Image (cartoon, rainbow, N blue to C red; front, side, top):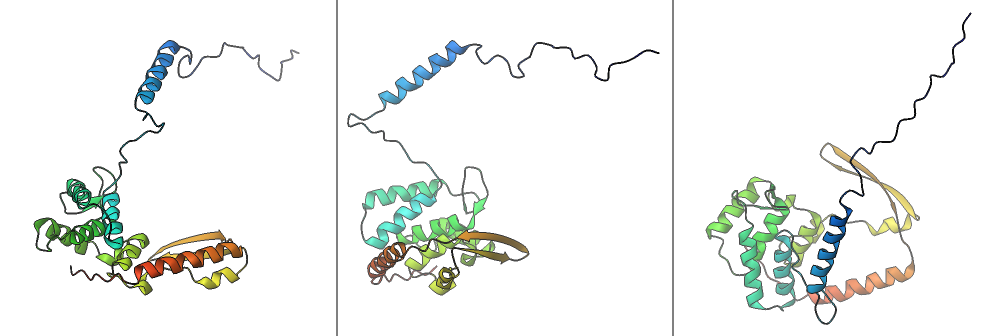
Length: 224
């Protein structure tokens, strides 16, 4: 009676790279790295730093106008150029998007609208009429994110009591706590670790008091 091996014979084949040889054309890679290095060094300022354009969505320009209006600072010419950037990124539907060719975003739309109002634009201007129609059709100012609501509070355009806040009593709940948030049918659960060092509390309190004194005199109601 014949016998058979319980394990089939293994044939050792040479390993084949799945994506080609990593050393193939390596001299071109090195050459490209050298060109990139030379290019970066050519852009360096004599003092040792690099300066380049910070590119993002139109929220940066809106925030720039907000902050300088709030503090009473800023160069009017630069703020007007910020307006040009805001206008350049407005979508056909009247809103503004987070990324190129993306859908309009309610928070960006409200910020851009308010920034143009702060710069003296009339609510009857076609740009603002178009923007306002899109904003109202998509839920209005109550649909913006928390950060935008805080900005609106700074400008006297939103009630602080209507902004989501973390109750200070949570700090007495130990070093960690579980929280559950619900919006409509969506539920999200989080477990947060709280930092309870007294030094952080004192620093935060001083910071809040300093900011409050700066904002106390700011009253600029803006009608839509």
